[in-house]
Image (cartoon, rainbow, N blue to C red; front, top):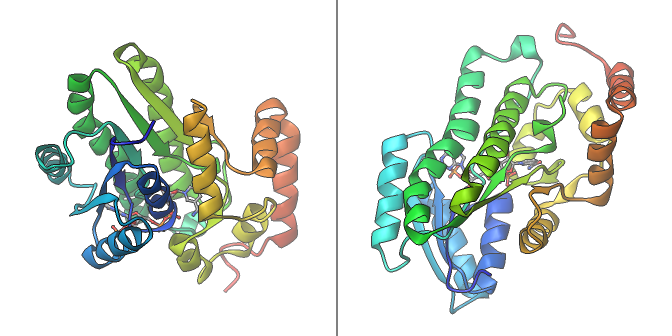
Length: 273
Ligand SMILES: NC(=O)c1ccc[n+]([C@@H]2O[C@H](COP(=O)([O-])OP(=O)(O)OC[C@H]3O[C@@H](n4cnc5c(N)ncnc54)[C@H](OP(=O)(O)O)[C@@H]3O)[C@@H](O)[C@H]2O)c1
């Protein structure tokens, strides 16, 4: 399924994107890793080369919020020995948590720009190559926060709901053109993004998010790989988070009551200082 396939991974230099890169390299995919920081990209390339010496991995510095740069980067990848992509993984993302009243408007714009428009730009850039090939596969990282509201994540949830809605629409719209989608909705997992957030996190967000177990990036990547191989559209890593997801779908009232209780018990509020 992955051997000799060209896979573009945005956010491939860190967290779950990096873990997916490792697993895809092991299975013989040709990788194009896309992110902004060249040092992190280079370090990831070296780590993959050390673990899988025969792997083909190239790195590309590109900010996914810049549509022209995304278009140009995908063309460079297609013209390179990697050739046109068979698969796209949209993992680039940011997370800024705080009380709604304390989040500057800029944070909402920046979060939408990277998480939503970044994903959109990359799909638009990949589509002509997929059409030329007669098909393709896209894995979009949404989140459990893309299907449930979470205290402190007003900017983040909005962006991840947007990714989920866009992916749900394109799944049905592009299926006749043989373009397959997977939308990943993980609970919290340990990564540089989360470690950064932990420095300033609100107690209510912590209490709500930690109602579910925190996974590791390798765990999430393993479940994405098996979900993609099984052709599963919605991939929710972790047995307990999966149960919580189905509970929320089937019994939204009790699910909301549980989260309200966790927030009530931990509540300090935006005016605590
Ligand atoms: N960790 C969690 O708990 C969790 C839970 C659910 C969903 N997710 C989602 O999973 C994805 C990966 O998260 P992670 O925790 O693995 O994050 P991470 O370790 O912080 O990695 C984020 C990656 O995105 C890249 N990136 C950020 N902004 C970019 C931009 N404008 N252009 C290009 N690349 C950019 C980063 O590299 P540069 O900074 O060098 O550009 C980095 O490679 C994200 O979409 C996240 O929202 C995470």
